[in-house]
Image (tube, rainbow, N blue to C red):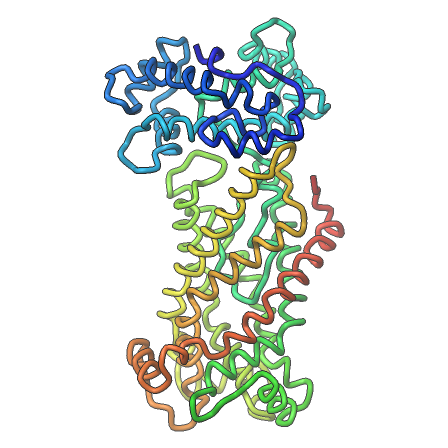
Length: 502
């Protein structure tokens, strides 16, 4: 029954397949199908899908719930666990009513088949359109799972319908289409985000690592490469970062500070070297923050309760935000030091330790946690929007352009990372500005003690909404060079550290 609704052709897609796909969005097989939609996307195919839907809809209420799928698939000889069926319903249930109507069912099949095609392509090492026992063994070995040839042949037999001891695309799809298997290791490998891009703010949700990367120790090489890339990137864009801090603290309606005027003021006051004030501590905090966040993320993943290799997007947001909060809490005094060092005048402090000692003597331990609340609140919009935009762009690319590989190429990766980081920064910028002003309080002579809410009200009253975005221009100016530099350095450090790239 399942096989009868699917296209059986195996040839390569004709040139006009994309046009056929776009004109038949309701067909799950029309996207990238070899027949170009003549069979897969035609009205007969939709009738066959409707027939399958009615067979699975055992209570005839026009929707497929977990119980319908369990009973219906059992009648067709397909046995799935309740957890697997819940994943199918959750993946396709767009209106969140707990069941799949016909359009949601069709859309789920279309989306799932696209993912299955990518998995099939990744397993087909010989690129001959068939998967044999050796290819299954190699693919599982890449994921850190070793099996014998007999075990691989047993896996093959469960899917092999014609006794050839190989699996073609049709056999693979028929077996997995109504099974929530969509774990594509290549997507994890190719779509690294937070380890690659460093725009000066380390509030992103940590990347996922495959089982193989965790078992072979490649994960720490990725983190070291990312840390090194971040250090170079932050150093190269440090003048823009210091200008941003100065504009956040000192710029106002009465004290207009432009980009050129700001640079001129910094050089006149302390020479060219003053452009890098605060960069030392900004680079030093990369290592402890990244390490703490990664370790916290791995522990929180277990507490979230997912037994999957990778978390779903909302689970990643929760785990990533909590890990970010733990890491930021641990190194927050370094954040305060960075702001004070960036704002210092020539000769004010002899170094980082002198700065820390004077703050402790004059203001006490509490000074090292000024601005802590807006900083913690800023993690959620930054990480959430950055992750959501990145996942949306990634999935859009995978749905529309990924045919033979999940590798997006350098330009797509840079564009997605830049756009998502920019959106995240834009959303959390007012909180970042308030945090910086609170951190800088004691460096401004006669500045009164303020709270987060009173500072927000003061800025809105005296400067308007625009006042919450002081320093935004140099902040955005550094994004593209920061992303580009960190990517280039990251790739070169990966080669030096022996990180395998596919």
